Image 1 (cartoon, rainbow, N blue to C red):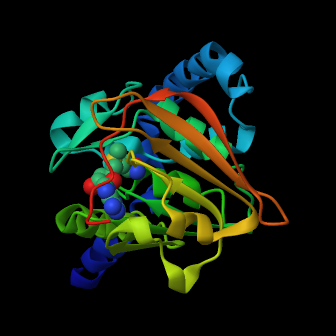
Image 2: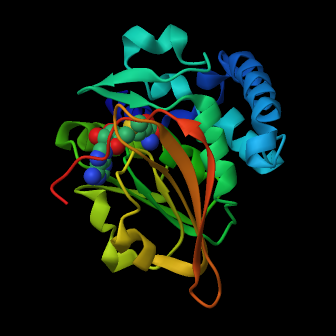
Length: 240
Ligand code: SAM
């Protein structure tokens, strides 16, 4: 009996198919709202619907398990939520958009700067080979690491650190996603992007207009930047 209890404790949560099913219709409704926002922003983005595989990932990942218990009832509202330490889990539409803009492919290795709750990393992990994610706030990084392991997202590696400098040991990356607003595009991240790779990053001051940028490095290593839409992110902190 004792060993059976341990087995239950150690099983990843998604092994319990029904545990998350209670929220399936909430996720479907949320996806409709995300599609609605895509249509509204299509003139700026050039795309009126997320890729079906991105939609599938959004339907699979249990956002309610990435927010503090007191906010669980709001988990499937299309809005950012506090996750403690003055930080937020991004709005689901923004997660969908940034994921879609990366154009993730099954063999890709992605770097995320700003693990936060781990939700964005979990969504990406359904679409690519591996996600490396860095969080500067130690307590958040530790919480996210445990959560991702417990939920069975084994192709995500998380660490504490200043993501401004990227993660040299695992570079170059097929894609880089920065989920905090930087004052400029960090050169170490540009350097760690593969030719043919994409980076999605909000740039701008905390109290000034921020823009979501799509940075592309072509096969010859030439970098181009497209400004897509105004956004509001917490700032990229650190000593850089
Ligand atoms: N992607 C997260 C999620 O899915 O929950 C949301 C990220 S939240 C909007 C931005 C995160 O970036 C915060 O947790 C913040 O602590 C982190 N951050 C800010 N500056 C950072 C830096 N220099 N390096 C790594 N993480 C940073």
